[in-house]
Image 1 (tube, protein in one colour):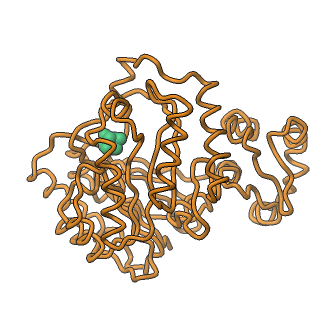
Image 2 (cartoon, protein in one colour):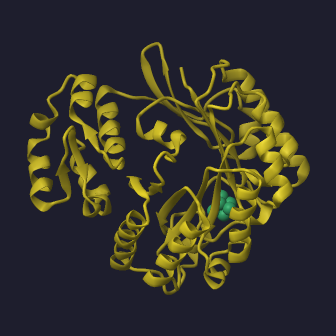
Length: 368
Ligand code: SF4
């Protein structure tokens, strides 16, 4: 039974130039209300009233919805003060009162999309907030009583230098955030930058330098690098995301959201319809369902396991799939142990920082 739920709120004030997520800008209040109505019906249809361990409102910009609407959705779920209840926040859509009310209705973790503390960069990537607003958002969340605050940054942005990126990270740590997520800029089909490539973006070497510098810097500042893109103070791991990386099941509600469940012994990954109209007409069914074979599950476990800084647990994976991992992947393991991309641990194997950098290439070798 899934003990986690992801709820997608696909509305944004305007579309960032690098964004190819399922999100729509310029929607009217009535369209948002319509969407929430459909979402409530979808939850009624599929949610089996389990007591949840984690609940995550992502987007889009969930903080664009009124607290009343968010509360209507929250109230569909069974959760208590032990449940990690996260909401993603855009700094331009919040004030102290909103944070206070978000806390009151049950959110206990906020994830703030900062991306950069450089106003020139923020403007050039289409973010609607300033650096000052981002700082204020963190401070207001703290003043409203949130003591589990995460911020997101992107590295490799146009005109971003290694030094300015590192300064941003230091500033975030100084502000007292508990968790930092870092994403390398990726320009994918569907975003503005795909057809209008920006100038002065970091090449692969500079992106790699930024990533390695971030690991070094954040670890020196007391942050634990617990997953390929995530860093936290001790005890502030994102429980919701750990759930994904530990290969646990979860509900996905809302347009374009993904879920993972076990039904009659079959492991199923599913996706909802992404277009608002299609989702509205089809909330009671899934746009895509993939029944995972044993081989697919093994590959996923390797992919997800290596994302975590503690890596693969041999006993666990051998038992789960009735394999001898060392034997099955002997040549690949030897190759990357020799090159230093994989490190032997007490329980199995993990990536070195250089391994994280080449994770896509290395993991592709594990696919038979
Ligand atoms: S990056 Fe976030 S805020 Fe920007 S358009 Fe995409 S979902 Fe919305």
